Amino acid sequence: MLNLLVVSINAILIENFVLVKFLGCCPFLGVSKKSETALGMGLAVVFTMTIASAMTWLFNEFILKPFDLEYLQTIAFIAIIATLVQIIEMFLQKSIPSLYSALGIYLPLITTNCAVLGVALLNINNEYDFITSVVYGFSAGVGFLVAILLLSAIRERIAYSDIPKPFRGFPIVLIAAALLSISFMGFQGLKLPF
Amino acid sequence: MDFVQILITVLIMAVFGLVLGLLAALASKFLSVKKDERIDLIVAELPKANCGGCGYAGCESYAQAIVTAGAPVNKCPVGGDAVAAAVAKIMGVESEKTVRMRAQVLCSGTTSLANRKYNYAGLEDCLSVAKLGNGPKECPYGCIGLGTCVKACQFGAIKVENGVAVVEYEKCHACGMCVSACPQKLITLLPFDTEIWVGCRSHDKGPVVRNLCKVGCIGCGICAKNCPTGAITVAESVAQIDYDKCINCGTCVEKCPRKIIWSGKVQMSAGDTIANEPAAEPIERRRRQNTEDRSSEQQ
Image (cartoon, rainbow over the protein chains, first blue to last red):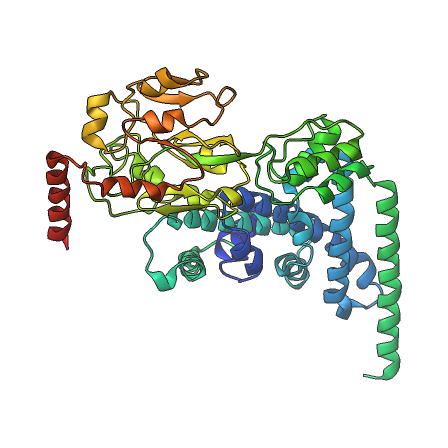
């Protein structure tokens, strides 16, 4: 139990996927203009990462490992995640329309996101068991959600600020993201009992 | 690494891809949701400006509302009659005629006509300035002129001239975004063919208006008395025109002592010509002198 807590705090704060590992920077910068859309994107990432880590772990354990095909991990995981998200999207549209409209266009957008693939591969590399993998995937998604919500809040805040002309628009966003990243690096000092 | 190894890998991935593809195909067959094809047809007809003028989030959700919730087919202000007719044809209903509207900024107090309370330097946004004593003009109802409506307009139909927002009628699609964006509630939608409008929204009494602005409506009621159809009423010290009764005769335009009722497609900047007439009273000239002195001091 303690182990799971450590894994989850590790994924959310110490090794935040966006701000420390620099995975999934595209939606992080692209969809963080408004808090509303950032929340939608973040929730979709949490959702996808959790399910993707579960499915890829099972696939790796029961299909790739027995046949010694582990060298196919990367390409197989991409295909699995893409198909999985497509099927889940259809399933949601049919059975839970409210969740489908809440996640909206963000769900298909993140099918091939590197953060999702990254969490699947890291699960295998870190030799996590099934439960730990799912918790790690979920926490990594939450870490992404926290990061993108923070950045969107900052962007909303600086939208009306008097920014020097050369920094207006995207440059100031990159600077804000960098400062956010530096502050998250501070969590590296957090010593957790492994 | 030998050639066979590569071949095996390719084969495995091909089979794997085939299986996944079949899975997705099966899923799409069993999990597909029946969507009314009329929605797509209507979306194709709509202008896809996604302006929200119809009252829905965008063209797609308006189309959905037409089909599923029975929304009226003539709500699109951008497309007008042509789109309403096309949508009505898809839905198999009769379309009512739409009246084309246009936005109108009800303020004539350009920089030289309206007196100023203070010089503003800060956020270029009307909403934040409106919190500072209703804007830099002495008249608390006047146009602030920092262009919050300009930013709200996605058709590029509004620009700020001489401190007052001006609508280019031909570009305006009457989506109403500027109406809700204006913190002074100065913008209104008028019928497109209307020639006559009152360029003031000041609810102050006559003497007060005279002190604040050279062109404000003083609520004297001369227009209301002279209107042949009784279309003008003066309520809360400002003349208002009932466009169902107005016949565009232009009597009010002639009679108005403050020249605040505009006729024809006159743009707001025309108001500056009045200021240059010699009618300016000494006291007003002095005040203008004062403001000029103040601004030169600042420089």
